[in-house]
Length: 223
Image: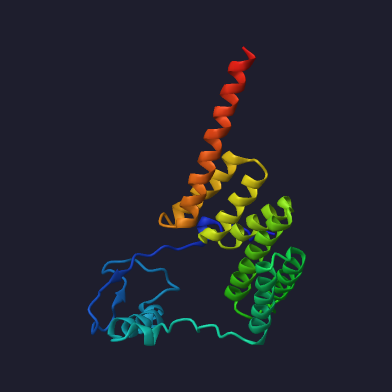
């Protein structure tokens, strides 16, 4: 349920004057001549001025605003990585079903992280597991599943070109060449130097040219 809107008449807007001089006794103040309501005084600005002085005199902003804590891999990360690596071994042997099972285990462990753990791990680990599983599904000929996993990867990490590459590969395998080309080109917008995507675009464009040439030849014979 959305919070109710605060009526305009409940708000009192007052002008503020800001002095950027670090040693100024009151960097934030009401301009002279400001008519203050009876329930507001200059003392109300004391907490704000305390903070302003700290910020203005801080020689190292990182002390005032420390960076967020860096997440540290834990035991779950190790298990997720082990399942993925085992899937990679099966993938190299073209044992697609085993690879799919192992990547699924990796993905499920990544997705089931407790809510108090760093979200970055769940997102990155899950995206990698699904990306690999998309490739395994493609190898097994399960094209719809390959496309679904690739789409999920893009939702998790849109700037990561691997998701766009996997999506394009699945679409091309389905015979949806134009859509596959668009997927590759979208990936290139995030990294124009990606050789895999450049090669994929060149290959699908060659297929499209051959397809159009075939259609043109067929049309000429029909006439």
